[in-house]
Image 1: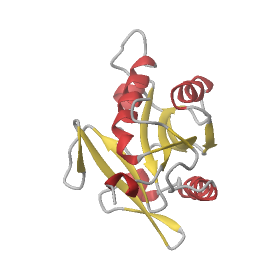
Image 2: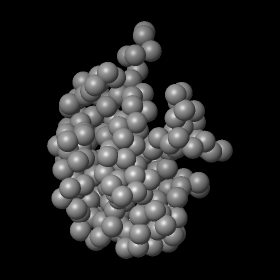
Image 3: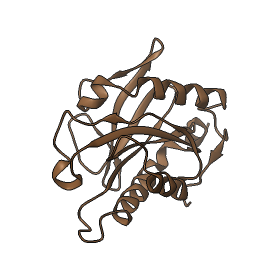
Image 4: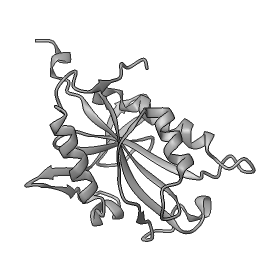
Length: 189
């Protein structure tokens, strides 16, 4: 059997950090221009447990999760990471291109976990090639998502639980996890 026969599609998701408690229309439009139609738009939650992004993005930050109608082969997530970084730069403040207005943590969900790619190595991240490391932040068991020991603080609190469960259920109902279920992108798209 070929190795490619073991690949299952994954749900493309993004955790989006922005200013303001309501989704900014320009952010949603940019996400849809880049990855296609949004299937689920989650609630935004205050990102107030760390000041890490405040010097760059300001105060009053909120983060939420979206899913797209698009499914991907998991092995293509590094290309989606490149696209998310390019989008962040495109949306950066014109007066200071280094100051992002939005932080987009693109990733994927399969029926068992949530994985985010990163350009930063870490002790629990697996190298995927091309300078990209994979960080499994949440696992799914007994009807809910559980944070890994190394997950970021907001994933440990996991205010996204309800939205992630809805995304998983829709993904599963759409035949998620099976090859050729849904809108799948080829690696060169």
